[in-house]
Image (cartoon, rainbow, N blue to C red; front, side, top):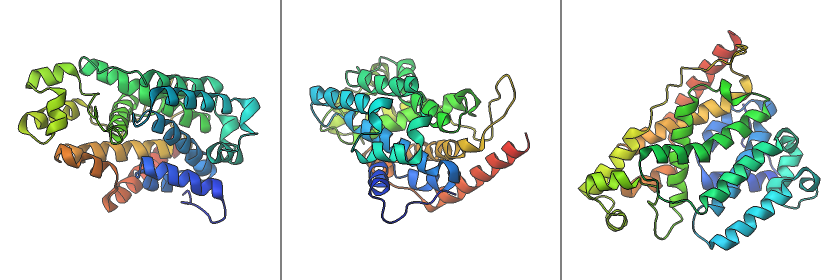
Length: 293
């Protein structure tokens, strides 16, 4: 299993700090990353966290676009090896930089740029499309580290929907207003709630019905399923971390369904001991499944 860190590496320490500030579940999921990919996965998720900061809505959109263009330039193969940014240095140090296709990196950055001007989805179908836009490029990039086609990821659609929705909720934490901009307009209309009403009292009965509707529409992920491609190669051991993270996110979404909306951000920023046991069982099941193919 991957080590949580080692002393004396400033790039590694910086990446851990950045990732855990964005997603504390990573502390658990990274324990189950295969040794040969552990450093690369950390570097990649530190990149995700760095770009996610630009989509938090906490700063000026023009500045965010300028920073995004800086990242796009620095991630080019001709520039990344010369960069002084700790995340980019760690991407090079771990070998992740040479394993990430430029086209997939561009797709990830393109989605970040689109989201800077994203509008509220009109219905749940558009919310699903937004979740797909956010999360599929991340899956593709992590799969690239183990040279695996993302089509071989079990429960891909559910993983994309759950991961994208939770990412929207995490990013909303930094917004002083408009934190619930991603709630579909049709859902609010159906429950007779305005966006201002959600902001004013998200724990009111009408507001809670809105959140129950949105979270309840998300597909529960069945982590026991796997998808097979046309050549039936089966899942790769390099995808253990991705599968474990998907399980943790499905569990987190289940927890949120039981909580008051005002406590969502608190729940998003912690992990439970029970998550560790669930992750261990999922990793063990996935590895047994891989070895049997």
